[in-house]
Amino acid sequence: MDMAKFFIKNKVVGWMMVICLGMSSSAIAELQKNWEIVTVDKEAVYFLDRNSIVISEEQTARVWQLTNFRQIKRVPPQSISSQMDYDCENSRKRIFLKHHHSGVMAKGRLRVANTEGQFDWKSIESDPVSERIFLIVCGKAPSIVVSDANVEKPDEQEPEGGADETATFTPDDAKLK
Image (cartoon, rainbow, N blue to C red; front, side, top):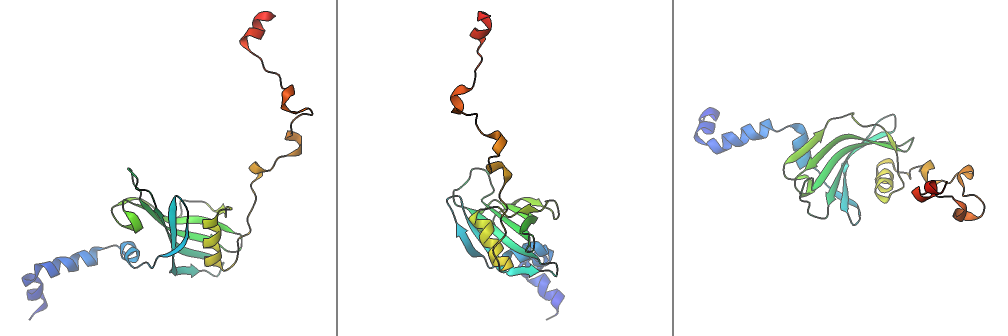
């Protein structure tokens, strides 16, 4: 039987071929992920796809990650898939691609898709998810930078005698003068 006649006779098969050929490569790649649990907390379950890890000569690793929210939300996303870059030399990360999904495990309608290169590099934060993924992707623990916001500076200490010596001004004080 001729191929053209086969597709004309079997319209379902023909439409399936059109749909499969029309899918974008990122959608096909999304279907082929082998998600592995990295860690779990009260908010979400975090996954990565070890098969997607690619490390460049500059020691920058790229990997697909998935955040699957545990509570059903009234407003999506229920899950977020991201292609992340990790700078293994300088302990930094950035979002390369980010997709918000209306369903769990990157299923459902794609609600938002951020395009590549929109996000700046950020230091690896001291949280179990970032540390664990960095360790898996780069093969070493990150050098975590402590934020200056949490460190008390000597010149910003309380005056001697404690906080009791601070003066307060009320509208009644103005009437007394």
